[in-house]
Length: 112
Length: 117
Image (cartoon, rainbow over all chains, first blue to last red; front, side):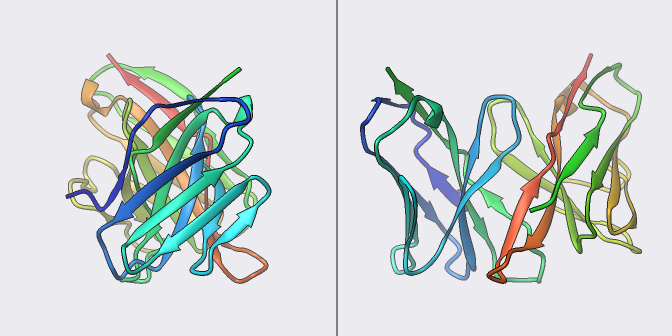
């Protein structure tokens, strides 16, 4: 079983739609959680951290469910510029290394 | 956040040769990492670059194949040795910083696109 699992998509949605991605992780001792965005042929960029209480940044809302070991990302009012691959990322709580474990990503295509 | 640059941005190399990739950060950072992203795949951690000591390699990666230097807190190099076509990939340098809220955040350089023929 992969440490971080995501539906690869693609999710094809019209502009203005609301879309949600889920991600599950296997290590219950994981410490921190993030969503990254990766555009084609570019490096991943931090979109938002995911806190236990949930957090919102404009049109983006992230939720964490530790009991079920899943993380979600909700995008409201989708824009064409939201088209990208969204990576679910987990930081383990173990050795003091702060290296991330990446999901394989969910591809979003927002269509006009 | 941190500003990270990598050189070269891309290269095409012959099998059996070696390539050294440089990573420069605009501020001192404690933790630096090297990742690989093969075509159509997600990121895989190669190693943690430790300043003043040998790098810490992940399972499946060894120092002879991927020697790493970290002479100071702003710079690191990754060498891909004795290359084969299977080494064709994007290699990314990454650093961890602490934001205003005291949380750790990880940022990536623009990557080096390597093609081995």
